[in-house]
Figure 1 (cartoon, helix red, strand yellow):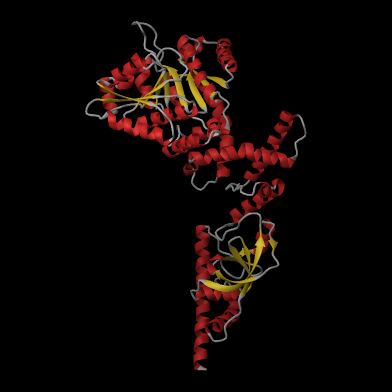
Figure 2 (tube, rainbow, N blue to C red; figure 1 turned 30 degrees about the vertical axis):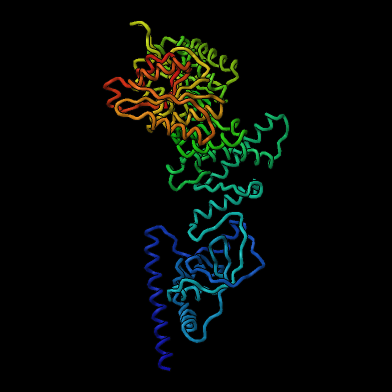
Length: 560
């Protein structure tokens, strides 16, 4: 009897200790704004349109995953601490049974996603938690939902998931595209997504001149609008710059910003290109380049699908240099099925002198030539310093094409020539520099020194061999102690790895002299090379190999 009385007294003391903790936790949660009460099961069930299963299984349930109750959610805190003194007798009795020989039966719970809600046994859960248990036996009734529910979900998240359920009711995307995940973090986002589908359906009807069904529109929107943007988001890694946000959040953000970006740039851009520009992506990373070359070497269909570049930026005007740049861009665009974006940069004085009619004539000339070549092309105008404007726009393309030709005679105009160094240094994209005539870009010379910058040029050369059936010449020059044989072995290994062929040439002497000489001797119509050979400081002091090659090449130079 004495032991029983002592045990009862201890259980009473434990109850009041739990009550004091409940009171303290209430004040702490009020100050922090965190959840204090249990989650009402019925609210979750209704919001998520959950359906209770007829089956019931006996399981060990993690106590931390029990977040709510069917009927007694006001009687306990979120940690299952008792909130009412009137529960003392029941709580004490349960504790004595759980710590004595009598024991207690399993509780009954509903499982919604990864969270559990007590149907019967709230006091048993409360006592078990105070005893430090991690699991409790329970008869579990699964509850099916269209949207996953987590023990960490707060009321705001539940509201969002309720909106998601409504969205899925209207679209049936979870059935039409079972792998789709359009989770968002802001209220009202699903209404905006539904509006996107409705607008897409409207324009589908116009394009196809028929009534388009809602389900067909949903599938077409997901496959041809949402999914391509999603792929670009994942490929670019842009989501890392938006912590706490989801892919669907970013899709909507990009949709909102696309209009602003297009207005600022003066171009109409595909969604994927907006992602690329915002993410600051570039001409494929090392792993992505390897995957593309592997596909090209193994699969004939990849030669139609895989692309070096999708979007070309061309510095354009109606003069000879600008027209040559456009013609060279069209050669590459036809081969790559790429879009061409022209940029006419003017000083404020030039802009004031060019009225709207003259601008329209420039635009018509540009776009008409693109149409003749069967290439998508758009022209935009910008004011300011040419290099700065080109660099700003370059991140929205995969490659920059402009005429860097130096004047043949002193005093002759040299478009951008005086800005060669800053453009080469600042361009975030590979640069195809024209140094004279337009060529077919069919006979590449790769100037390769095994440096970091020349690795991308090597990739382009192997790509040209696989995709375009070209036979590059690979040149390595021995100078200042460098070993050309080692570089050529590295390049040869790369070509052989993918089953491509090339000629390999080793030369001695000044690098620029050797590059220009071999290009002429081998009748090469484009030179591929890295952006600088030594340090940028040495390049600036001594003029640099690149600048020497550009002055004397007489053919396009692709600088990666």
